[in-house]
Image 1: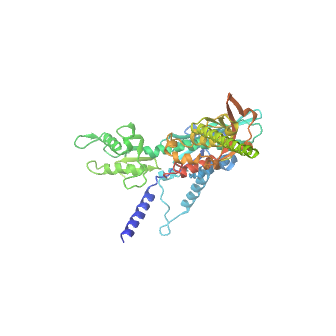
Image 2 (image 1 turned 180 degrees about the vertical axis):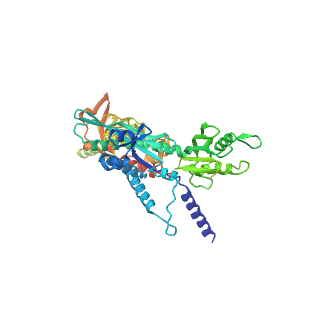
Image 3 (image 1 turned 90 degrees about the horizontal axis):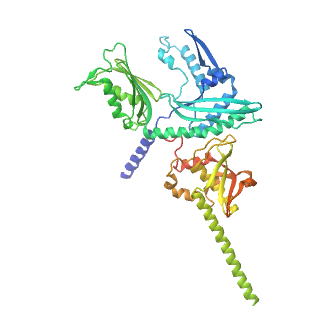
Length: 319
Length: 176
């Protein structure tokens, strides 16, 4: 009987450690850069109050350019080989379109009402990932001689930091076709890219995930970040800073901006797991701050808004 | 008398065989020592197929024969601990698979077996150009020493997976 209990406890502990031992895996997507789209004519232009604004037309690029498909497919394959399958942008765009069409057609059987969608929800309906692999290449031609200039940047979608890179110019060739040169470029650069990505992940596991925390207030709230609370009349902004210092890994964060109405904290390092051993992201981390502000002596109602794994905003003064 | 001479001859022959063998073993040991002391150079030779690296390994030896044999070991050792700078032929720099400087010491037992003569390292390397050495790649650097350049193909993806499985390096997806 005792033996059975020991075995059962062992199995349970193993299950718990496997269940909660995994950090949240970032999603990665390869996106052609604005420069590449512009150079190859895949841009949409519109007039924004007299200024012509150009935005990349990814859908047309995927429909018309076979080279971009070849390069993305090769990168996807090599990343999958490393146990990191990527989100495919072309498929993500198609899924968004089909979801939008379905949502438009959907209505309640009982009341006939449509699916609820706020303007923010509509804005958020874009192809997104936690890490963007921004891809640029140019073909250099000198007479019959061709070479490929290749640049792959890994960008954190929340902190805007470049966390991985691989760039360089391939060997010039008189005879090789462009797809062959592109294939060689991917082959020769991917190891460097995954190497620098690995360094980023190693740093993340050692020093925590880097996130951005924003604090804002609703227009109609009568308090602000300079309001004073507690026995020692501490300003709310300082109280929030103290909470971050206590809860960030090794107390690491930067106060980038602090006014009466808003605060921006960058390079906030959060632990990958909470006290219960569950994987943590920006939302779960900032939820602690949200709860503290809701409770006495502050009693500030607030709304917590998230953006992926690495960005969370608290809006003070109501839901 | 004739019988006696035959016996002596046989003994001398055996002694000679032993001494040749001992000499060969000593040279092999020296070559292994050179690898352990990282006395070799690795340079990129071009873009290989996916998952592999085509490299030229320059090994040093008093006997060119041992330098060729040692090149295979040096190539794998180089990919694991040394990497190489980029260069011509579209080559980009390659960082060593093991980035932790103390990994060789920490996993000394594994690497000793892995890089032993006939060890597992041979699974991850093949000779390009059938092991032939170009005339310009056989250099006499001193009175008694040669520097031999051998082009080999190292399957770095497989090698990396082996090191990941042994827990020497982290996989890109480990922890997620």
